[in-house]
Length: 228
Image 1 (cartoon, one colour):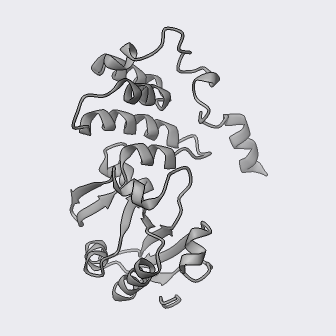
Image 2 (tube, rainbow, N blue to C red; image 1 turned 180 degrees about the horizontal axis):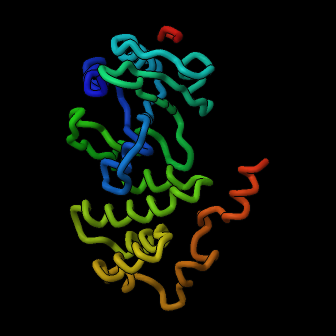
């Protein structure tokens, strides 16, 4: 049914990018994600085409959300659906129109990749934009970000520039991936200023992972588509 859903998106001409968990799996930085997250272009035409694809796929809302309209998409609302599955549980589908920490949809498509999967060819967000999307308050996202940086080196089509190398250093948060990057890609170290702070220094990256104590402390303290 997932393959049918993506075929429906293609048949209806929907402009989308696969983001978040499934995207990290396709880039080899994670092994599992239980849902599908899509960024759709927030235009009236695309919104209508997406709703038509949802109807054709027999999707339905599973959370209370506002109607899926351009107005609500650009206000950063999330939209949550269930796709029917041939066997087992239904599949979670989450939709965004303006994801956090990334630029415009048209800009993101410039670095996006078409990746061949068992579900067909999927338009997937580029790694650098995916890295920004993954900078959440969840500690477990930061090892994934580090692996995405290594995946960027593996899939690049030209030599890494000094700016690329500094981006890589800034976005590696785990010691193992740092060692791997310096060992397999020595140009990273060569592009750094001699006074660069060590990777564990808070001054190295304003988007550093959240502190564990703060994370634990905070932990203590869903038109045109039929409803379920």
